[in-house]
Amino acid sequence: MSDDGFTHGKCAAFGCPLPGSLGVGGEWVCFCHHGAASGRWQNVTRCIRSHEALASSISDARRFLGTPQWQSAYREIRRRLTAAGLADLLPGKADESPCSPGHPVAVHWLMRMEMHLLDLCNRETGAALAHPSPPPGVRTAQQTAQHASAYLPDMAKKPDNGDAA
Ligand SMILES: [Zn+2]
Picture 1 (cartoon, rainbow, N blue to C red):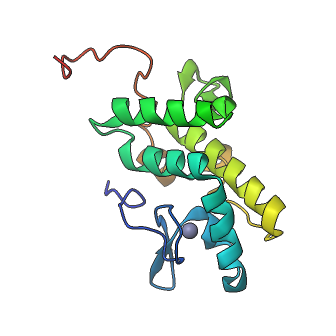
Picture 2 (picture 1 turned 90 degrees about the vertical axis):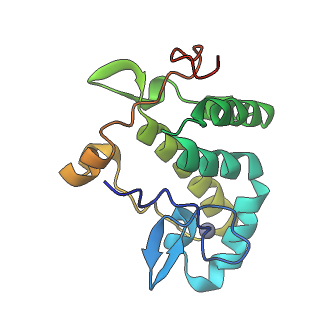
Picture 3 (picture 1 turned 45 degrees about the vertical axis):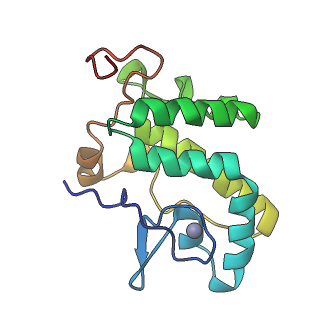
């Protein structure tokens, strides 16, 4: 399908570093600002910016997953999250689909990072934000189809297509 949601445009909230992936009133906003009352936007932005390692990792994952730059983008995400003490947010068991053990699913992982950032913002701003996407278990067929190829590419292994040669 199209690459809706993976465009490089920033969220419409002033100063927000996240990509705008959801349309609201003709503007694109990120998953954090999507549910926030406009009076809280600034506080939400401040919270996002104070968790830079996580926010950048979410942005990079949205931008580079499935692209040829993914290997190097992922190395940077891993370095960044580990340095920030957030290694438990790297793809792992928690992101595996029951039908495919051993394979973290990209969209599950991305959702877990986004939920973590939302939790932090809720705690820090009292904004009562909720993630606009339903949990993977109740996704519609259409959404599932869009992410059908979303298994994380091999990240720890060496490139096996000779791209790096
Ligand atoms: Zn935003």
